[in-house]
Amino acid sequence: MTKKFGEKIQQVLLYIAWSLAGTFLIIMTFSVFLQVFTRYIFHFSYSWPEELARFSFIWTSLTGASVALESKKLHDIDLVFNRFPKTMRHYISVFSHLLVCALLTVLVLYGFKLTVLVHPQMSPAMEIRMSYVYFAVPFASGLMLASYICETIYRISELMVSTTKRKTV
Image (cartoon, rainbow, N blue to C red):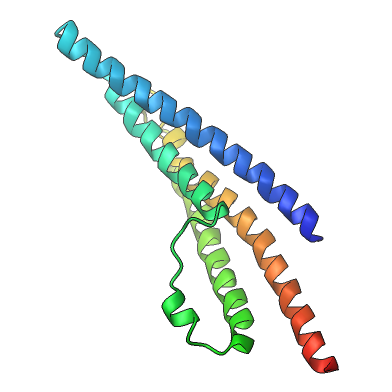
């Protein structure tokens, strides 16, 4: 896989994550506004806007985490990483990327299992299947995993190039 192809995949995933996070943020804001407006202006409240806001918050935060990961906005612990010799940093970077890929794979697999498990359950106010809410975990983890796989392949190719350069020198 070339770097350009991997970057194209990452751009598409970032667009999907941004779109979903933005959409759910708008839905969450609208439902909270509706709840506050009806409660304080008309002195009654619906039961469903709070539930919709909660479900939208779940989707917003998880897809937002995917955006943060893709945009390189998550925290790195450079204190430990910078103490290693420069020759070891590529290996450690690849190793940490493989660990994150393993963790995200676990989240995708068990997220799907949990989604299937809660599928018969209905939400109390909106009466939608809870699997639609729980699906946020494997979906966002899958977005992050695809992005991290592209990044890991790129890091491995960088590592291979740097080791062949050292061998020829």
